[in-house]
Image (cartoon, rainbow, N blue to C red; front, side):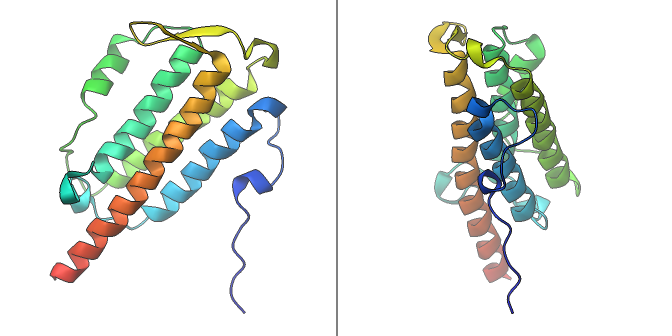
Length: 177
């Protein structure tokens, strides 16, 4: 008998202390973390910078997912980006150092940002979700809920791209041997 697959996060029920209107955001971020962790468990660090057909590398997506989550949640708090955040943004483009622990470290960094996002979601008052928020230096108008939903959507989009690229570069590496 095949092992039953776990339910997707959103089907497991409400998350404790997360406001009802923010449950989908929290579920999406947790789903990304689970899929990312599983997909990259044995991913070779030597493939982090590979860009088949010129697409973004797995390393870029790993860095960007953590960074964009951090930046969007900063805007959601109505704060400006720090010098450290701006420097991290500028450094997202690989090549990355290919240390044996690079993949695990990048996955852990993303996971820490998910934890921070969940903490922020738990402390967000639902009555403030339509409050205006500015995005970026130009302060492009958005709302608190707009930023939170986009953080989940953008992260999910990059996970999809990362999964395809990871599978492709792994397949290519195996077939070159």
